[in-house]
Amino acid sequence: MKNQKTYGLFALVAIFFVSINLRPAVTSVGPLLNTIADDLSVSSTQMSLLTSIPVFCMGLFASLAMPLTKRFGDRMAITLLMVLIGVATIVRIFVPSYGALIVTSFFAGVGIAAIAPIMSGFIKKHFPQKTASVIGLHSFGIGFGATISAGFTTVFFDWSNAWTFALGIWGVLAAVAIVIWMMATKGGNEQVGTVTEAVAQEGRNPWKTKRAWMLLLFFGVQTSLFFSMTTWLAPIAQEEGFTLATAGLVLTVMSIVQLFGNLTIPAMLDKYPNRMAWITGLTAVALVGGILMWIGGTAFIWAGAMLIGLAMSGLFPIGILLPLDDARNDKEANEWSSMVMSGGFMMSAIIPLVIGVLYDVTGTHDTSVIMILVQIILLFALLPFMKQKEA
Image 1 (cartoon, rainbow, N blue to C red):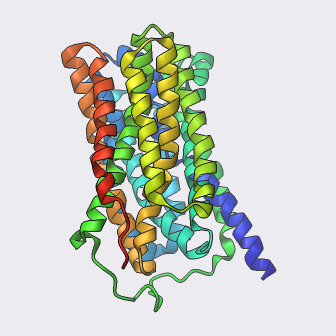
Image 2 (cartoon, rainbow, N blue to C red):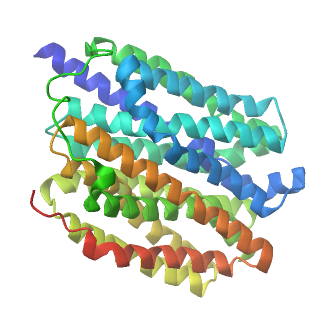
Image 3 (cartoon, one colour):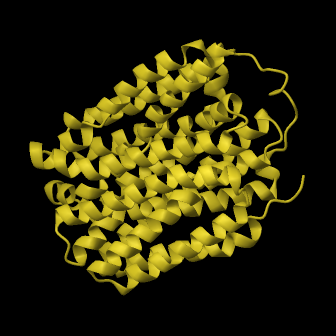
């Protein structure tokens, strides 16, 4: 029993450190979007691909989770994927070109894609009684990684005067996480290449289940909102008259608000488990934030970003939890999570790219804010389909 408790504690630490690495390869680009575009002489549409490509990969390659887990086990699969993320990130220091950014974004996206459903299955398997709370820790780690990358990328740029260093230095985090993960999960005693009786149970095919498709749409829209905000909030703020440093600060503070919600909301979900109430309330908060951003001005940009950040902090972990709530066994948990994340991330790659195209066409970020509002309205449209039906 003591060994199990010790393993559980170390596993929580490892989950946190791995989770930190699931956003910096994407979110570190936002604060330096205009700087990189000017240096490489590329358009906003081209720059938006640096967000859209890894996010699209998160969807396209999420299905790798099941075969990788079966072949290597969850521990080694996550280790190998972390190596991929780390190498793809740190290479950016040495190859200062748009092509290199595209290639590294692709490989980072592949790694992030497969880790996400593997980690969800790992959490449900090892923490069945505290799944919501541990998903909260996982979400907090993701948010923490997004926060520090948003906040310190400009610091690293100011210190080094090189955007390549500011983007690539985040690969060091992956190296740290790999060491901690390997040490902390050593006593997991997982089986590789075999299937337990529980996993071998029959499960509903999510691709043929209407409920799974609704969960996919919900996850896709709220994740799209996250990547739209992290990619375009700083440029939107700069158009409103913010300096580069202050625009980066808005993004950082929004991420800090998300961190607070990532920790507190999943913990409250254990005590107040009504998913519909949470989704409705958080979506309403996001709508108020979107309206404030549309009104514009320094104060409203700040307030709107904070409210949307708070909403996203709860919607993301709920989006991860919903397929786990519906799953009847470990097999369904893995397959439903993989399907929801796969399709959802592929969806969420589209809107940030569309925002970039619209900006190139119109020359104003008014269209960017409109697209943010459209996504929030879509979340409201999905509310009637989010209520869980009895099995």
